[in-house]
Length: 325
Image 1 (spheres, rainbow, N blue to C red):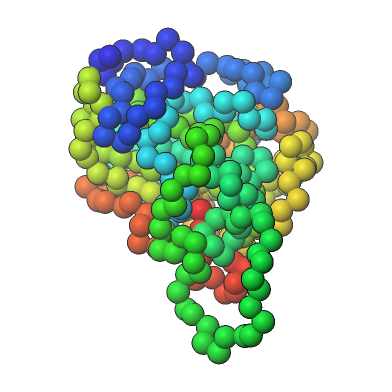
Image 2: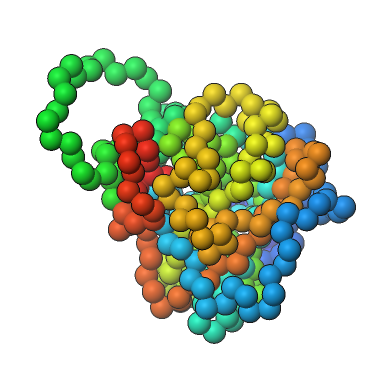
C-alpha cells in the first residue's frame, strides 16, 4: 500500500509496531453509530459555542506542555481514526492541529497517537488493572490485599510510589485495544479521531493521552525513523464533565473523581497545557462533543514522556505520582 492510498473504511485496523506502521492517507471521518447514537457531522449545528476561535497567531510561539507518558502506552498498535470499537459512551470527535511553535507552520505527515480510558475508567490492554488507582501510576488492581502491614514506617520515601514510577511502562495484560489509535496529519497539520468522552478513575481528572512523532518517513514498508517530539495530555473543563456524570455508563462509575483544579498533571495554563476547546449541546451532551486543540511542538526535540515530569509533586499517598496515567 502506498503512502497516499486511501483506506476503504475509516475503521480499517492494522496490527503493527511503531517502525512498521502501514502508510495510509488521510480522509474524512465517517459518521458511525456509537452506543446506539449516530455521531453525524451536523450533530453540533446550533450547539452553543464552548469557546471562541483564537485570533490569528495567538497560539504561535507557545510550546504545548509536555507530560508523562504514563504506564499504559501501547506503541502504534492500531492505525485508525475511529477508536470506539464496541464501547459505549458519549461520542467525541477530537480534532488536533500540530504546528511548529517557532514558524507556526503546520506539520504534515506526523504520526499522532491517542489513548484514554473508557467511561468507567478502564484502559484497554490493562483490564486486569481495574479502576480506582491513583498513587501507583494509574488504575489499581481491584482485588483485596492479603498482607496489610501493621507497623508505621519511620522514613517516608520522597520518590513516586511503586507501580509505574518515573513514567515506567507496564506490559499489557490482555489483547483488548479499544480507545487507542494512530493516524497521520494532513497538509494542514490536522488529524481527527472519532472516540468517546473518557471516564475517570481515582487520583486523576478526565484526560486523553497524546504523542506526536515527526521527522520519520512514510514508505510502503511503514513509518521509519524520526523522533517523538511531544508527549502530552488533553483535558476537559469541569462544566462538561459534570454534564456527563448523569449520563450512562458514566453515571455507573462509582470511583472517586478528581477535578481539573485538583489534578497534579494539568499545569493550569489553559490550551497551552492541553485544555480542549469543546462544543456540545448543554441540554443534551449525550448527542456528542466536538473537541479541538492546536499543539505547538519543537520538531527537533525529543520528548518521550519518560522523565517523570508533567506536574507538581503529589502531596499525599492518595494523589497520583508524576507517572500517573
